[in-house]
Image 1 (cartoon, helix red, strand yellow):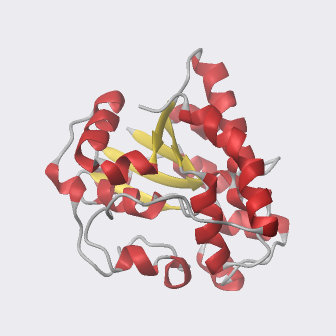
Image 2 (image 1 turned 90 degrees about the horizontal axis):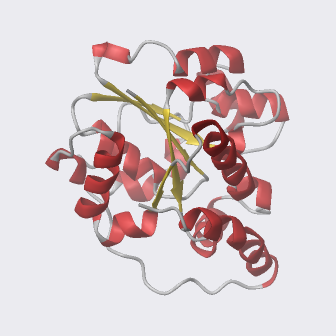
Amino acid sequence: MRIAMWSGPRNLSTALMYAFAARGDCAVWDEPFYAAYLQATGIDHPMREEVIAAGETDPAKVAAACAGEIPRGLSLYYQKHMTLHMIPGFPRDFMCACENVFLIRHPARVVASYAKKREGTTLDDIGFVQQTELFDEVADRLGRAPLVVDSADIRATPRETLEKLCDALGIAFTENMLSWPAGGHPDDGVWASHWYGAVHRSTGFAEPEGVLPKLAGQYERLAESALPYYEKLRAYCL
């Protein structure tokens, strides 16, 4: 089974990738389209040149690999995708070969976290619009809503939420998914040194988050703009 997990940045996506990698039966791929996205858009991201040099910049080849053979003969293939990477013109037919799941997080938390790592954050940067478009595309194909999981639920009740997710995917939950070694994962993208500091210090999911962060000015407006997209998908959560 190939699992395409669709989220924006700062959504607990790396920790969830670590959880699946810890199963022992699951290969993982960290942001398959990142290099192709940077090459195609010319956008300036931290470690841009290193990401392009380390990755595949042909989106057709990336898509073919996403739908291709699962590495090391394992039974599961978890692909951590950023919704903003799926720009017009990039092939999406590989999604038909995957179980597509949508990982969401309240936009106030996303904006507060992302702004610490990269200034000048825009709505395109945080992926909510693209996530909703991909959700609608998958729903139209399936004739039903695809799976949605909220990072807040994972942090509040990790065992119960992961049990629900595994059950919905038709795979067994394992205790291994609740912890991992500190220090990162061999399949981390080259950009991990900039973005993954907190999860590299972790050995499991963090405690539930507190009250929503207070935002001001452009960041408050940005979170408000993203909120309807989050709320739409939140209605379909496990």
